[in-house]
Image (cartoon, rainbow, N blue to C red; front, side, top):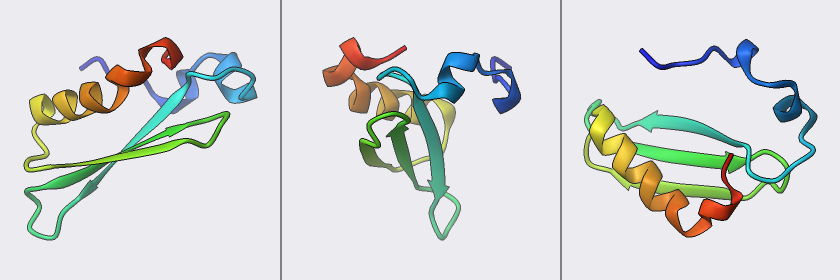
Length: 76
């Protein structure tokens, strides 16, 4: 469903030669309801985090948009 296996990412991402390639992880809370979004920019090491009240896809999407909106010039 729109997911790409990590082995399918473009070679330029593996090279870490440009700013704007992000990795996302979702840390699920103790009751398996809330979650922590972590975004890491691969070249600079910049790390962003945001707590969300639910691990549902729409909540994750809103959280990611909130984190990356101020940095949209640095997103591929």
